[in-house]
Amino acid sequence: MLFIRILNYLRGYLLLDISGRFPERFINICVRRGIRVWDVRSQGGVFRCKMAAPDFKNVRGIARVTGARPKITERRGLVFTLRHYRRRWPALIGIMVFLIIIYITATRVMSVDITGNSRVSEGEVRRLLSESGVRIGAAAKDIEPDRVRNEMILKNDALAWVGVNVRGSRVFIEIVERLDSESVPHVTDEECNLVASKDGVISRVEVRQGQTMVRRGDGVRAGDMLVSGVVDSVYGGFRLVHAFGEVYAETEYSETKEYSLVYTEREYTGEEKNLYGLELFGREFNLYPKSAAPGADFEEERSEASVTVPFVNAPFGGVLKKYRKFEEVEKRRTVREAVDTGIAELTPIVEQSVPEGAEITNRTNEHNILSGDRVEVTVTFECLENIAEEREIDKSLIDKTENLDYDIESNNSEEEAPR
Amino acid sequence: MSERRRRDGDRQKPALKEKIADAVDISKNLVLGLPLVTMVGDREMTIENYVGIIEYGDESIKIKCKAVNVALCGKDLELKTMTEEFLYITGRFKCFSFEY
Image (cartoon, rainbow over all chains, first blue to last red; front, side):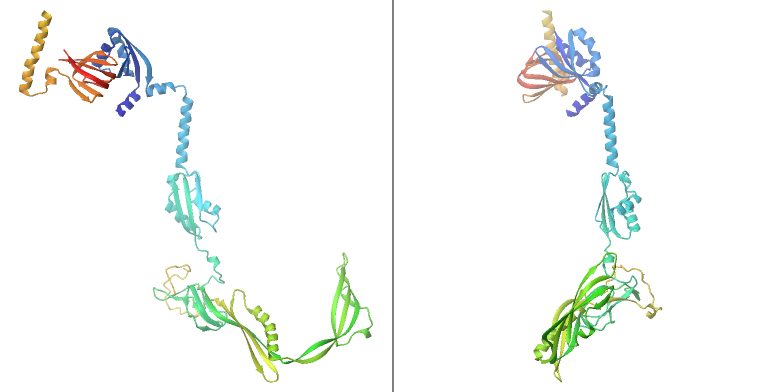
């Protein structure tokens, strides 16, 4: 039924009011002549019905014969609707332009979203994309994600993977960068071993590449091989790699000094002398006779006050020298006191020798009583630190006759797991 | 009188045809010119084998068929579709009768 109505609309139909003496006859004749009439309603003697528009021209004769007066009250259908808008052709052009714009925006790349890049700049990614044909305005259906991905990865080594998703007119680029090999501290780009930089006892070995030569608990001396860059290949023979890793060892830092139980100490007598001097052009002039100069049993304490004169580099200043007389007194201390003094003196020295990055795990103090009222104090720090140090492989030592059947260059090979 | 005789004759003619139709066992509406009426409750009606409309109004419709006329009365009657083969009427029917 709906289909028939759509068909009628497309062909166009008329709403007729049929008045007159015998409208029934009019309809009978119409039907007999093959003129389709439908939806007939009677309203107070007037028939209201629908009729296909092209048939109306054949109705006049019937109307004359039957004395009925058909009157068109409304025209319906596509033909009449279009005729109604015939004068509004600019609107039609607008609709066409609208459709064209819709078509263009739907088929062309309108935006390129880039996510996931941190080291590779967005500008660089956009440059690579436009070289591969992904740019704003390009036809979206011409983008081949696999080709774009391969081209970008080949052109920029920092890219590990590129996801190219075309969603209608938007292109989403997902960047996965290669692991930042620069962040691993290393000195050389050549193949190398890791050797011990200090003596120590191995406590932890973390090797990312290379063949481990030491185990936990092993004692090593400075220069000993920790991780070898010469790796046995699964394909037979060997290959050279850049050994990477951290080897933590327990190291010791200590300082030893002898202390005597008998020592001298200065005792001030209370006698003081104040002497003055002048400093001019870097030279000092005493303002007192030479005979007034104090002897060796006086301790000097200087204080200066200088004035800088504009345009003259040299300072002008006064010097106050304060001399205090002292006497050296021999004293004796207990072993305990001597050790305490030693620890207080030696601890900062040891602390300074511990390198940065080392973790101090233990502090010990020892003392030995020696002959002749002397005591030996030792302060020791135990530390945990990375003692791995890169050293290039001496290639002259490698047996050249061995078959290197694996690519030496592949530093970042992942299939090999040397553990 | 002559008119009446003719009508009687008209009425007797189908009787013969009816007998033949019975004998040959074919549908009577074709042979005798009887309408085939299909009703769906009091709402829809299809009349096949009709000749024309005698009277048409909002509350009553009379339809001429070859052998017998059909009269229909009710409310909001509407001739939905008209072709040479059938009529399709909708509305709320009250009574349906045959007229001679």
